[in-house]
Amino acid sequence: MANKTQEINPFSVLAYLGSDYFCDRENETKKLLEGLKNGRNITLISPRRMGKTGLIKHVFEEFDPKEALCFYVDLDQTTSLADLVQAFGKVVLKQIGMPSGRVWKEILSWFKSLRPVLSAEPATGAPQISLDVKPTEAEASLDEIFGWLEKSKLPCYVAFDEFQVITDYPEPKMEALMRSHIQHLTNVNFIFAGSQKHLMTEMFLAANRPFFQSTQMLPLHEIPEDVYFDFAQRHLERNKQTLPRETFHELYTTVYGHTWYIQCILNRLYQYGTRHIDKQALTLTVNDILEEYKESFRTYCKLLTSNQLSLIKAIAHEGKVKEIGGQEFLQKYQPGPASTVRSALRVLVDKELVAEDEDGYSVYDRFFGLWLRQ
Image 1 (cartoon, rainbow, N blue to C red):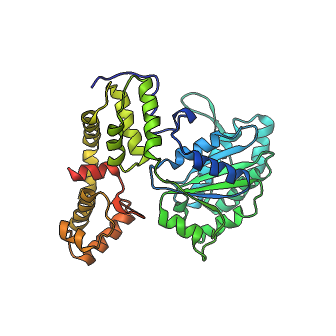
Image 2: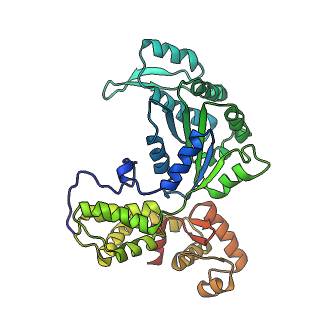
Image 3: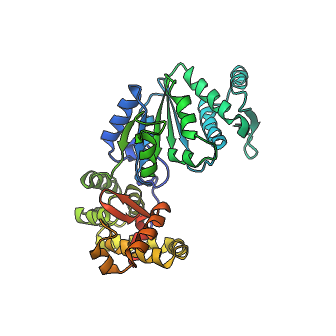
């Protein structure tokens, strides 16, 4: 396979590259835009790597910056309210931009408990803003940020990604605290995005939770195969590559239509520049990727008990398992007694190694599942 240098690989696996490189999601984009513009908060739920972050950034790109302010806040690595405020505050201040003297005085007077500090970036000398958030003043700081957005002359839209992590914060009643701040805002609307379906569903649909029925629910599913094929074919043809429909069908079904894994494989196929992408080229590309991940996958296996490893191998070989405790599955793979299997399954689901949806159970990491089959 020939290696080629291209100006840009259209199949991004990291950053959102813009609408030209964004596949479909027209219906979801429309629902998000209509919901936000009409004063609704939205809960967006999808498995990891299904494309929710790209969708949010795509939706925010649709807003004219002169007509609305959009803030994307990733909470995935936050572990406390202070962390949330730090992440949120940095995004908001970055959006405001490097302030003039008058604006800087206004910021200092408004964000008192955040204590923003204007300094020079060591390597380049460029101005940068840092924050000093004290845990004891985190709630006051959060109130200051929301207050700033509420008084903005433009409508504000905030996306909290991986919102379910707030349930693990040490602060008591975090959901109630967030709800109490959010419910009175009239100039700010929210996207609450999360990848842990059971946690997000409980947060927004359980009658005893503060956010009960306070948002429009929007699940994110796989992009239809035909739509994804057209997208892939269009970009590959620009690179003078051909992708037969049957090859793409094998690619799509191999990773169960999971967006990031499709992008990852297409990214390599584009990079290699193979003129005619047949099934052999696809197999070689997938094997290249699995070879790169094998040490990580071996580490995963070492961290599992023998029962957990036997079960996840069985699930990988089956692809999708409707009933883990069913006699047919247990007899075919013999992963252990039913009670042991149920216990192992709970651990694998909690560790996000096995995914559960309406179709059954599967290995969450599609590449890990392929490697286990081998």
